[in-house]
Image 1 (cartoon, helix red, strand yellow):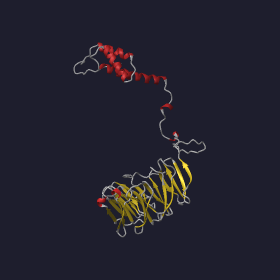
Image 2 (tube, helix red, strand yellow):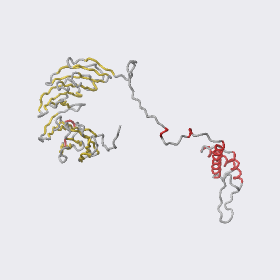
Image 3 (cartoon, helix red, strand yellow):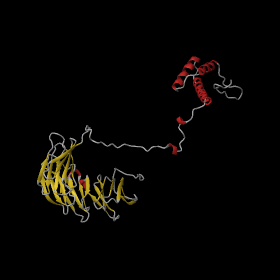
Image 4 (tube, rainbow, N blue to C red):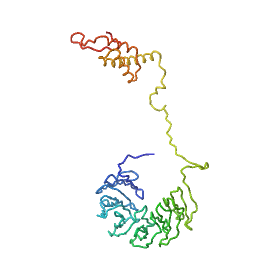
Length: 386
């Protein structure tokens, strides 16, 4: 496995284009577009402020940069680098921005979810959608990009509006039997819309394109409900994950549960095969490396060499002990000996009987400051001739 060099990145904003040819990354207020194969910089764009969100268009020709703090959206073109677009929401603010499936319209959600503004890059027209609901997944497009389903909240009640993406006109508008609508999701074939309630109640509702309620499913009551919902690619099955640790599969004919899969915290069935990834390091061949042999592999020391090392180590201990004792020259011999032993114990050196005799002898003799004219006195160490 090969790795590239490290590139700077801000706020984890890094996305591949839908066609896989480009890689966009953000560094503060700069947008860097690289070639996905060579990682060479193709385009470098500069925005007005720090970038907080990026998104590619479906055809990989445009990329939008959302600047939520300023309420701005800047759009850049890869085919025409000199072309750019700036969308300013003004005092309404900005909390979310996304592309439409055709890659020519941008949907901006204002602060407090007061409205959704649809901006057209081709005709420069503007459309408004009121009362969007702030929920987990409140906007969903059909796979062919023809219809948009939007969750709404009006007069303390949940609604769903279905709009035509070609002219953004309202096609259907109906209420949902939910306490607090959490999300909506189109089936891949675009014929059925799934809507589910918040986690406080287990309820999922299936609607047709014209707003008819097809079925309602509830697995249990008085406990935390739905956590996630996913359609199968064929639109024949709907998987519903809940907080009880189970996934229930519904069929598209009767909308009844056909099976369920559990995800327990502990597995007690001995027939279940569990795979665990193990980290293995490659074996280290020491024969091919030019490392010196370890100390344990070296041969034993001879008796003469071992005795010399011990004697030199012991002499060094004695010299240090004598120096520590001389610092307490103003004390008596017993006090100097006791202080020297305490300092040696703190330094983790073994006491020496020679140290005691040498310290006592030097404490009893007067110390000459000068020996001869013009000669500076020197402290004697063990082994020096008096």
